[in-house]
View 1 (cartoon, one colour):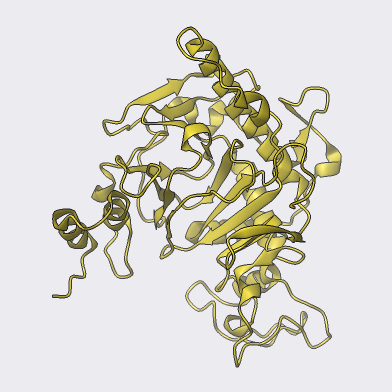
View 2: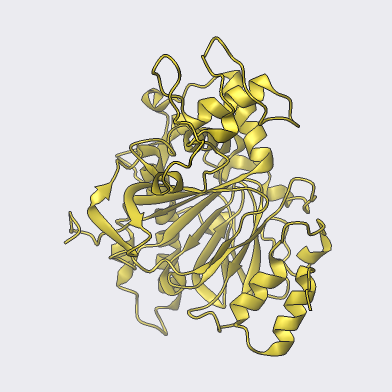
Length: 408
């Protein structure tokens, strides 16, 4: 019997008793090509930004108690999975646009690595070399597509004599149509499931700064939890280790509305005491958070909104997690609670130009004109178009333990 409806497959799996808790949840919330865009299947999805917790035990750390690291926003935690933290609307719209621009123009180009680089050029595909011998980046190719065709025919042949772009952009070897991920810093070896010392690129300073900032938010809260519980439980000595977080690897994922990511654990870093920090930009997604095994319950569906930051550390550092579904722009979400809106944005990172970490006070950010990112109105328009149809997720991690300089 062929079953095409995702929900019916979910019911069958649940009744069969042969599938793991994670697979059942993933099947329930994923969107298969051709499925209708139902919004009511979000009724059991946790939405921290709108204040819907769906019966899960949630700890909310308000503004007044989360400012040890100068972060003025709320932090959400789940009692079932200590070490998980969710920071709604922590990234301003301007910062989201700027980090998206870097993800599209810099992070997916050499010397960094992408999924495209792992696949040989197919017959009929053209290299990204113009007639004058110059290279065209995926970002410039995408902007040329938008400039030379309307929204319904973006893959028609391009004829831009000024830039010597006369080929069909769809048939270029390197294009956003094929881009799924990029790695920066230490590159993850997907085949051997490992990191190598001879397999890395420079780590962008902006990502290192963001990682350091949010790791301190995480560490300060862990330290506060230990202070509160010290009367009945021993203090966690790993807090001192977490405080020295240095992002040395990043994975940037590029999703369209048909994308998902299966359940997995981030368990190959050499120091698992440090958290994994994820930044969300573009379309929202349904994130699944499970336990130490795929059989563990509950598997909690969470609405991961653009501008939100998620941290997996402590006891939840090795929990299974993944992306079941990207929500298209046609689906209207519940509004954010007023205290989390951008107008209340004293808790947000506002701009890359203000993202220089103050060396005297490593918990705060100050303005630094040297970090200013220059972009044109055409860039802004192209970023807006891309984010209307895609999601970008950036996750940051520290690979080596403190004191270790190279991978043995």
